[in-house]
Image (cartoon, rainbow, N blue to C red; front, side, top):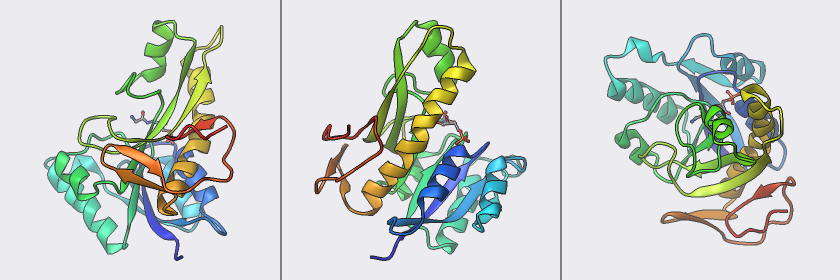
Length: 219
Ligand code: GAR
């Protein structure tokens, strides 16, 4: 089967983009063929260029509103023949119209165990709440913020002495495992979006440790 053509939208460092680029080799059922950044200083752009992937800057500050900004992104995605979109630290809220155009074809990674702690400053709020466990979620994007069918989650312990930076780094390590797995499951057809659930269509032989997906088979 021809690998799926995937675009990654990013605003910052792009470490999740890097994890996807690193996974998009050999027998992987996807390739990252387009990156879109909304900030000129996003390091994600450098990562894309180093990997030989087209990187397009669509600067939100140059548009009159969200619709024209998103229309410009959509044009890049359509021109590149993109089939799947991965939001990876893309810090712009998307309109329902854009989300619907990519319905069941757009994923996001969020640094908490959704539906807990949607929005910003996740780790700060987890620490303030005194939780012992947090994690990350890769989910199919729905119009509400950080909402949608879960593909993969990973639990991450909060340890004594953690600050925002140490906790973010520990969670990020699991994001880097969870996101490639989620994209692999969906682009290979091993998992499908079935309404508001993601379900496996066949057993999955192996996955990085510590990840959980909807049938609970992850170990
Ligand atoms: C990641 O932790 C991602 O989960 C988070 O931003 C970081 C981006 O890091 N995304 C959100 O908070 C979106 N709600 P990266 O640029 O190194 O991939």
